[in-house]
Length: 384
Image (cartoon, rainbow, N blue to C red; front, side):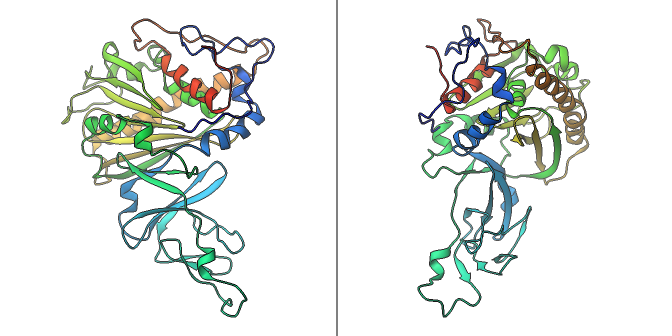
């Protein structure tokens, strides 16, 4: 992860307690980190403009011409499979007058600007620009689309606005191997469903909440009935953390009923910097991504995309998807909206991370790990 030194928008202010590199000694981020417009503006470049961003599963790009658009740090991008079967990513901006080229997702044989009909091949080359043949010093090749870094990682397509960013596999060693262990069929799964949640909460609150199960026993009764919390452990790594329970507690839980699958486990989840969580539920093969898309200092759009065999959910998988959409996510959203309101209170600025020696399911060390990366990205002061 590229964390260059830069002027801090998270500098210490009177009344702030220190953020310490040791989570057991550290206070949390100050409350203003979750609603200050200046901090939100700084995050666009310092975090989202320098990090790998998940566009979707590779199954969305099955053949040449298949494309998906995505918004990253106020930039519109698209990923497309070209005629040589390679994945390409470009700024979604016509090089003539700046009009956006593509919307949503779909398939095209030629990328044609809706404004003046400049036409680009799937590899980004400008092929046709009407009424330019007699122009002085005009060459089509000078107006090709501007490329963006794109990589395939663990069955998913990622983009990065930073042309100098290290490969994702180098930044997150070991992550792909973990995901493939719990979901060996990841390459052959297909898109089945997207659930969208519009949350009145800062994106970081949503991540903080995902990264600890200290709240699970009180807020997620059905999840605790599904997963063996005694074996539930969170481990932090470079730019990711894992939440794994290797023992299924109840195949007939209050959450949903399932039959044990090829890999016998209780739950597998990962956080990948800066805003992606990856879920594998026990039972039939499945994987989902829950991405927290900042929409302002105090608003976040969540997309949960599900991938299952053949793109059609079985009754068991549909029950799991419905549980996530109708029960678990609303429970978490209610918590995060309440926290957002509470952080605005004059009575609150910072808390402490609850850390136990065994780093059990009740420990908040992964929250500290995430907040530390936020501090490093924004040039905040971290005590050693």
